[in-house]
Image (tube, rainbow, N blue to C red; front, side, top):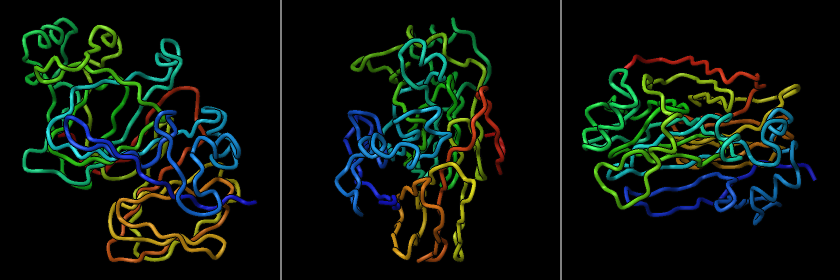
Length: 309
């Protein structure tokens, strides 16, 4: 049978800083379950094992094999997450036999005390950062950003990052390999400072964006859906993932309608060659996630509307 668009059940957990909800993940322990259509009840990993490039396309299959290449999760941060850093694909493969992690943080809501920590205010040395972790003065070194709803930030490997009083949608490479560097003075959870020291970018900081962004791992486009859109894919070689961030929409494929409300997502397999997107509420907005042909070098290109904070 031909594959159809797929929706999945969320998988939520309470965290020390708030609530984490996996919306789509193929991570072994976390394995999303289809909730509609003739594949209802099947896990994403089972679907990938069976249908391979029919789901994701040849480009993704070449790089990620039978693992779905991206994950999507929602972080409702009421307190403050610990300060993390991720590794790139090369380091992750060599040391941990895993994928690295590049991520995009889309800001859904920002509270009165909202803050994102994204790199350093100015370049620091490894010795300065280590000393700050020992004496508790890390926050003075960090580049703090007051986020606004609708902005997004690219979390590249090596960028130290944390979040406070904010709700984020994370679109990321299919990996949860990360290292905890600092927990705001608490020692209750394990730290990985020494293990991660040589992957930290001591010079970088992130920039806000609102346009489109392309990385080797994924491309994200923002769609203001004010009228019906038709998608016809002749040579397109990628899955398409739509996340509804505002309003509501309907996706029609093979004369079958699929609803997408705010906070929901739908996966359009590469095999689905034609479909329509229709708005069902004013000011409907979708984020479209795809994987374009990937070069050997991990080069990030951005097309952003915004300025450095």
